[in-house]
Length: 325
Image 1 (spheres, rainbow, N blue to C red):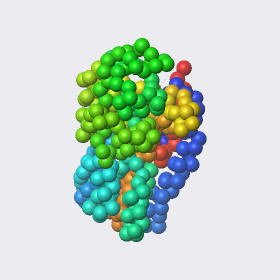
Image 2: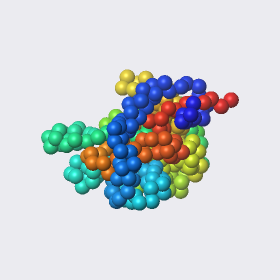
Image 3: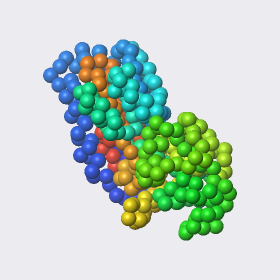
Image 4: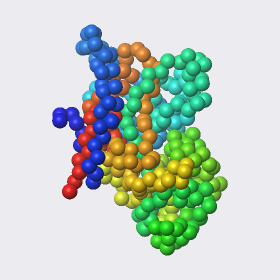
């Protein structure tokens, strides 16, 4: 099928539900130019200067998108301000910027402010990303479930030897735990999903950036941390071999454990990997300008191909999952 992306994997299951999502956004882009002088509008949407705010967790992908868009459109200059998700949302609501790319939806406080001040915001889904739990490659532990992770990140377990079941006697050494800083999307996402709203241990080391997180895990044999797929992907489904993402199993509130799944594009696409989240483009800008042009690029084939090659999952183009024998 022309324009369909293939995600190579070891699974057969197709992502039929994604097709409905793709159809929602493709007509919207066509509508922008319907009944208009396309040449005229293409000019105003691909020239000029524009500033966007970008969530740090998705910034490697957005940087590639900006570079490619400006390569194709020589008269366009897009400046990115890289911040935490909370800071990006605050900038949008306060009107400091009009367009943002962020790795989460609105929280309750933001929803209330948007409603109170009657702020009109366009929202488009941009990609599926995932939070990977990473350890040093020298660590022989291969998988952890939510309960084990909760015990590690709350310091109930402080040595690898204290793990049980499949991980009993696999490894020993004092665990060095690293976490994302407050206001970062991954900090809140991991806390909600894995810690069930509980608090991180005071002994957990806070990393100010994703770059620091990856570096700490690379350089400490006993380290564990978490980071988004964007930061550990070399190309498509090829990850940085200097860190090791673990297979993760979700445990629900009743104590039922799901299947282990690894950090892989295919498992993000069919959501069998438990730590998957959506990335959004949010904009208060309704003028026919560079914001429209760049957003259209992000959601169209070329922009979504960059998403795929960055290890994430496109959401506005059809995706096929192919089994490799």
